[in-house]
Length: 403
Picture 1 (cartoon, rainbow, N blue to C red):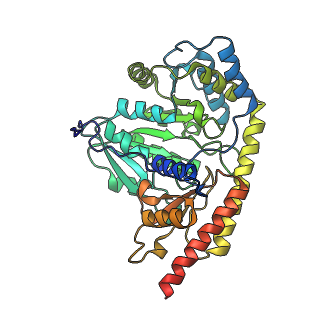
Picture 2: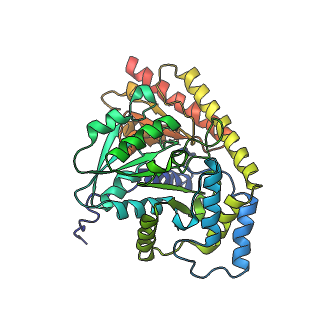
Picture 3: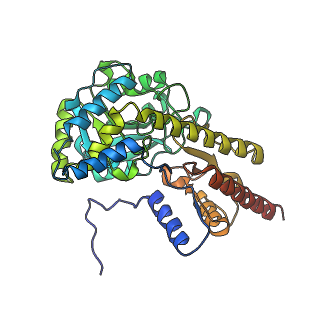
């Protein structure tokens, strides 16, 4: 049956990363030997303490509708946790809104802050959902290409050239999905000073902040002076660093009037997030013993990062990639293999999956079709097997080019 899409979703595209994951699962269910390195999801079990807190909440009957903006215990734990990460800066629990995943927190922020006629600047390559969330708010996303000499990050000059009189916002992400690049504190300050001067709203996605291969957590906008945060919404959660993606808990910290408006919007969309999941998240953020689990997982990601990077450098010395300083992705170029039959990153990934059974995400999903994203949130055994298959595939392509 034909139907007319409403203008609300006229420009909406399905998530490419979700589609690739579903295709990998379909092939695996059909008996194919497929290694899925597409999805951004830790392969670890949820740490024991938050898992048991969620189970205990169910056993205690904490299964009714929760407060819309989140249980006080989680909002307080999140405020204290984020405060400690940024040297003890004050963060008010009343400014925290808990949502069903960070994606909903980002939707709440975009839908609250932007409207038709606005443009929103998004450094690219960018996570697949940012432009779609801006479209849902009837605003226009403007992808700002990052500098290849600067780990594909953007600076004030690039943003200034891309901004026009309609510019209303800027969406930042650090550590960056899909590249693993990390903005320094000085770089974040320069961007926020520029945004403050232009009266832009800034949404800072810091979901991967704890997965940082430098000293301590990655730099945050919360490390900056109060006067630069008056028009800033910070989005985070427990999914990535605490291996709790399926618990679906996102956290936003916003100026009081914005937080109130986001919470009001949420009452009509999903209402409060799952109460047992909130108790689990509160335990993850409040119990210091869980930090040992986080440290262990980050060190494992670091080891996997080193394995993947060393393989690329050894087996593919001419391939350009972004040095991953955080998150769990390697973003590398494949346009050197393009020819008449293999003319895009999407084609590269399709053939790799068909011929070698390895699922990666093409750069078109992130705004740059010269690159692909590999997630090393997989065991070392699987990574070694997948890397060999990728090398075999690339060499077969190179051999055909020489014939």
